[in-house]
Length: 123
Image (cartoon, rainbow, N blue to C red):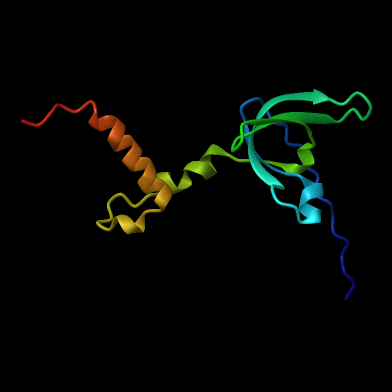
């Protein structure tokens, strides 16, 4: 049986300012160096004058560092629906809080703490 050649996936995703993305520094990745993948926020896009390719500038969120000239082939959008899925599907009717993911519990605690400041004081 002949193997079918693998088709290279072409992505035509365009990113806009404020989008949250996952970026992988491909050179660091293939060399096995640390810090090759990070979460960033898109700050701007621009077209490279020599290649005509659209590149992006990101803010790397964990260190608040500005990173320029990012190739979108190594970026993936981090949709809000994925980030919020565990909260949106948290089993709030479950009597066992252990059934909720840690992120859902943390979110609920944070909001309860914020909302409790608006509750009337007990007498």
